[in-house]
Image (tube, rainbow, N blue to C red; front, side, top):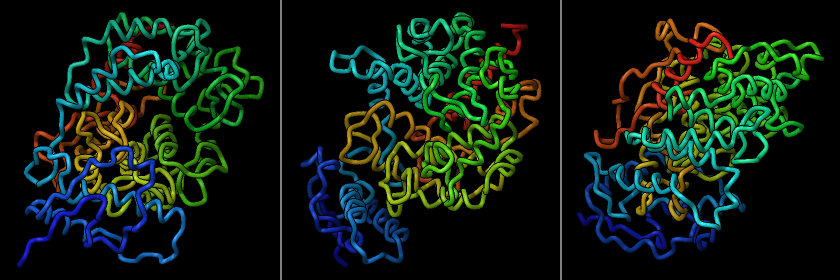
Length: 477
């Protein structure tokens, strides 16, 4: 029998032809045009990949053509060659998939933590995020980030606002997203000098100004109230062991609230949309990143089995999360009728450990996600990306690696773990552990395994526990 012939992205495989449009690829996905070539006869590994894709493709296709369906077909046109074959000619692991290109990803992230040319001035307010993505990405790859300790502490000492919280850089107003990324980065940097650089009392007052009467938090004073604020606030309160009592000058006190968690669970509950997902604010469209923020928030204010089942329709949520996994790509999209994107490897893939802690394990397809990350998300120049045709960046590198970690490791909530830690305010997230690697139908070799991350904070376990322990041992601000 003649072997099948591998085809290029411009002439997509006939094996999946029925789900690929004949129209030209859109400009958004074609900035690497000419990257792929006809790769000739299929190898044994490629034949195995093709057979797998045949087994997971949608059995029924709606014949109605829309702008959305055409865009999806054009995306598949670009992605499928990477799922079927190995256009970048990476070394393959024992399962016939590209190995994790650890060295090139480390080099890319180290460059991301360096100096930037003048055109990047527009990114200045995102400085805390770039540092977080870089440090966490390197940590996931097993790279020692201790050399960045002094540099990290110094950078954020300049970004700390006198009235509490952190801005994007020196002289900028505080913002909860920047403050969240800063606290995670400082926790990863670690050390007494780093911890002591945080003005926790000013932070207490700052967070008090963000607390709203309905239970949620605004991102900035007088700004938007959404679920990012709720998640960012409780992460900061928990890691820094800040008192739960609202400060005397908190505006919410005038309306009867006394603690940071008053009405919070009920407010998150209202963010669950009619289809089961979680939105930025009540009445909005569900989104993958907001789902993680909502689940993370509830997993900090109490044990997931208690809080998720109390405040959410969990079966409906599971249905919505499952629907975000694209077929045959295996990666996730962030909203209904949207395209697969590597960042949702974490934002949606990271939801599963929290949901499983509230229900039962084995709810999601880990191996399909790992296939997408290893095959389609790795950039030949280093770093990981949204999808083929897009450039790698620190953001997608960090969250693809977090998604790979979620797929590879079994994260378990166990109240017997760290019994002496987290006994006070918002102590629930200190009882997680890694219970070995997932080994059923895995598609990664030993050299492809990344480090585990704390499933709520998305930084190394050690950084989480050392930070919380340090601030628990302090008697006061």
